[in-house]
Image (cartoon, rainbow, N blue to C red; front, side, top):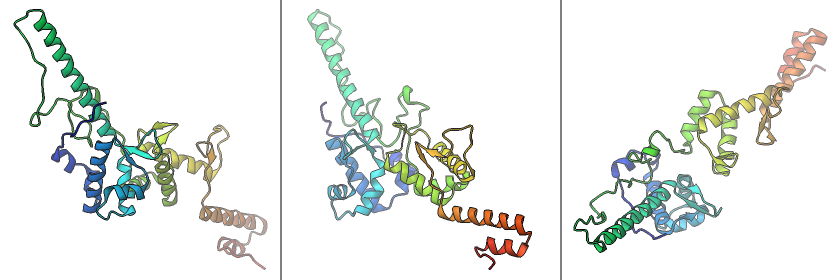
Length: 267
């Protein structure tokens, strides 16, 4: 595929992106340099240290780790691509092919003696093509993409708000984020559609494992094929509650029950 030296940049769309607004000035600069490098070379390294070297200007691996989630895994595990850049690259290739086809058709008409010739459209730097769009946002001009929302991983604050909304503990939220960040936000080998729904399912699985497995659901308490690990604090509270219940049933002694709840045992 022919390499294009440039893509169109829309400041209004770029500045209107919440993901960009949440970045520091240093992180935004690193993101722009990685974005341009990805357009020029087709991909960027997934390793934060290599990405920081590619950015240059004294970029740290900490900044690189913040920016790299803006990109998506490629077929090569060591390289990352940008979905919108890939779409823009394909659109430009389709437009070049369309223009070339128009040129061939015009040449055939001239050979046939026709006096009406329609030359192929040649876009210039000041004329935006109908398919061009800034790579961060979905194309508003493509009928096939209207109403289709492209998946974007949640920011840290977004995940915390959603976890609080659905009642997922902070420890489990961190497990959720770590799990899907490590596998590229894939569900059964496919790109995740809604991380909010995935978090809700994670919470339901966690609750099933916490309060007991439902015999009617063979997959209850599982994430993939692995059982959810019960947090240590939850296990301690559960064991204390069971001990207190046994003491109350056997001795009917409220003092002993309170001591069991506090983690003590009567001598």
